[in-house]
Image (cartoon, rainbow, N blue to C red):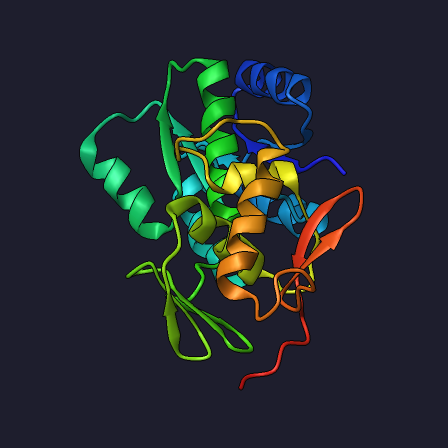
Length: 231
């Protein structure tokens, strides 16, 4: 389902321009011409992000931001002709996520919107230490233990295990596991994942031939046993 962007500006030509570029980028667009109307539309449409002008009649952008922040934490990109630092600071202190000044590049605005949405939808940061049954992985020190005994893993093996431990029971594709080790030097072919997992099993499994921790999901990839019990 397409994400909804609420565009709020009292200049019709700006609204038409921004709307055209956002719709071309695959977004659904709602519009409003002042802050008061924008509050009503925001409550009806529940947008994923608001592109907001500051200088508008009736209720201006700053007052809209104050009011909407009492109701929900929707991301806001402020769009205004004001370029002074004090105006940017006021907008950001009220809770705006980004600030674009007029005149602007519509493509840059779309890119900024995508970046803000990515930040807003990013999963919560994982704890420093991941645990699954006898497995313990410390993301800060890159240390791994099995039943309290340290295990020496390569960086690639560590990243694979870390990825699997983030969501025990979930089947990760080979491509997802490769992406998890992006930046680590190795031959970038999906089947190399099998080799790394084989080596990882050899280091952590009680019996690598009959694995208890890392299961193969045929036609997909691998998953961590979600029913591991601590020793």
